[in-house]
Image (tube, rainbow, N blue to C red; front, side, top):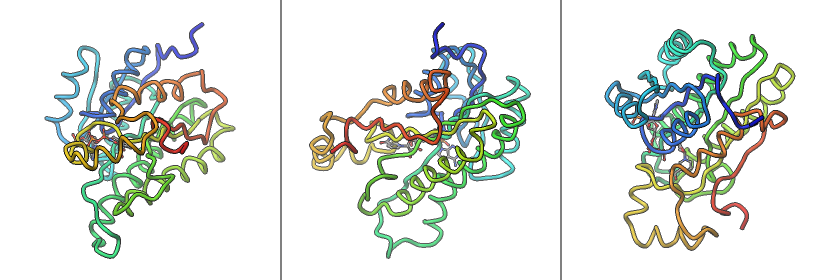
Amino acid sequence: MNVFDLTGRNAVVTGASRGIGLAIARGLMVAGARVMITGRTEESVAKGIADLGSGALGHAADVSRESDVARLAAEAEAAMGPVDILVNNAGVNPHYKRTEDTALEEWEAILDVNLTGVFLCTRAFGRGMLARGRGSIVNITSIAAHAGLARTGAYCAAKAGVEALSRSLAMDWAGQGVRVNNVAPGYVATDLTAGLSANDTLRGRIETRTPAGRLAEADEMAGAVIFLASDAASYVTGATLAADGGWTAT
Ligand SMILES: NC(=O)c1ccc[n+]([C@@H]2O[C@H](COP(=O)([O-])OP(=O)(O)OC[C@H]3O[C@@H](n4cnc5c(N)ncnc54)[C@H](OP(=O)(O)O)[C@@H]3O)[C@@H](O)[C@H]2O)c1
C-alpha cells in the first residue's frame, strides 16, 4: 500500500495558473489525483491547463469574491464529484511598504486575497468535507507568518492569520475527519519574487540568509503538499510544515 497515493481523490488548487500552485497541481496529478485549478481569468486558467496537459480541469474564480467561490465549489463538484483535497495557494504581495505609508485599500487588497480568500474557500469546500466525514485542506502560508519581514506588514499579518485559522479549524474539525494544515515556503523562484531575484544585492542577501544557499524551485513545494493531502498524514492536523531551506531553523 502506498500511503501517498491520491488515486481516486479530487483536488482543487487555487491560484494555480502559474508558480507554486501550478507545480502543486502537477504534483497532485502525478500522485494520482484529479485536479481542478483556478486563477482570476479564463486566459490564465487556460494557460495553466495547457501546461498541465490532458486531464487537468480549470475554472476562473477570484478567491476574494464570495460569489466566485460559490460558483467554483459548484463547478468543481459538477465536473469531478466530491472534493477531497483543497489547496489554498492563491496569494499576492503587490508592493513593499512600511505600514505608516499603507493605505486602507492596499491593506484590504492583501488581506482580501491572502486571508479572506482562504476563509471563503475553506468554508465553501469544508462544508461538503464535513458532511462526508473526510477531507484535507492545505494552506500555503510563508516564512512571513513566523518572522517579521521588512515593509511587508499586511502580508505577514495575513499569512500569520491563515496559520491561526488552520489551528482553530483543526480544533473544530479533527473529530469529523477533516484535517487542516499549512505549508510555509521560504523564498521560491516565481513571478512573485522575480523583482527580488533580478536584484543581485537582494538575491545575494536571501541566498546568504537561507541555509540551503539558494531560492527553491516551485516544484520543490509539491512533496510537502502531497504528504499533507494524503493518508500518510492521517494523524496530522493543525500543523505547519516549513519548506524553506532551513530559513526558520536559524
Ligand atoms: N514565491 C515565494 O517566494 C513564496 C514564498 C512564500 C509563500 N508564497 C505563497 O505561495 C503562494 C503562491 O505564490 P507564487 O510565488 O506562486 O505566486 P505567483 O507566481 O504570483 O502566482 C500567484 C497565483 O495566484 C493567483 N491569484 C492571485 N490572486 C488571485 C485571486 N484573487 N484569486 C485567484 N487566484 C489568484 C494567480 O493567478 P492569476 O494571475 O491567473 O489570477 C497565480 O496563479 C502564495 O500564497 C504566496 O503568498 C510564495
